[in-house]
Image (cartoon, rainbow, N blue to C red; front, top):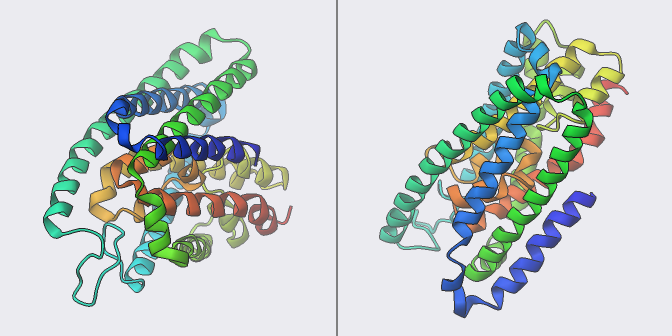
Length: 330
């Protein structure tokens, strides 16, 4: 919770500053470059930590394939749940409420087309940057850090501190840009409590997919499957809880699944935003939707979509320590 307060305190403070600087917005053109640089650094460091982790390397065989299956099915199921909810709320693919004739309440059609064309180019560039730096980080972690660094615990602590500072800077930049734009508060007022329907849809979808996977996979019971699915990409908590409860195989699957989910979510958000829906992609990365993925969502979609990303990420963050021990019987 301390990290949530730090990250969102920085965003709120910078939003306030930005709201007072709207008449001087041209001075802050450097923000896009700053955010892209921070994203590149963070995904590189994340790749380094994964590539140097012996547990990740050791579980790349059969357990890795099962974990990948869980990840693909679960991500697809939660996206379907969000899509169904969005349509029930009469919102279009870009997260805009519709009128009776299917028209958007917020923008004219020509403006939407122009905006999405710009976002498409930006998303493509971001996807390339993310993939390049993740791969570079994985290779550096595997071939250099894992071999050369003896005190991996101390190294990971240092990396963790750098990532914390980087996320804080990144979210501060996002808050400043939001304050300069001034659209998020207006959208939140417009959409109201509908935003909470999407975390609920993700939770219900997770339960259904967890039960289904528990029935279909011989390696997992229904309880184990639910515990794995409710890890939501939090690979430092869920696998430990599951393993400590005596479920070693489920713990290994949980670890790999959560690594896959966070990594896949970060890569797929800019690649799939226009194809599957702006709100839908916020359900892909799990708890990372409320921190490291916020600027990725903002750049791949629109500023106001981070409202949904934050809501989904926070609810998932609450669910993990509550529901994983419950389902696993810890």
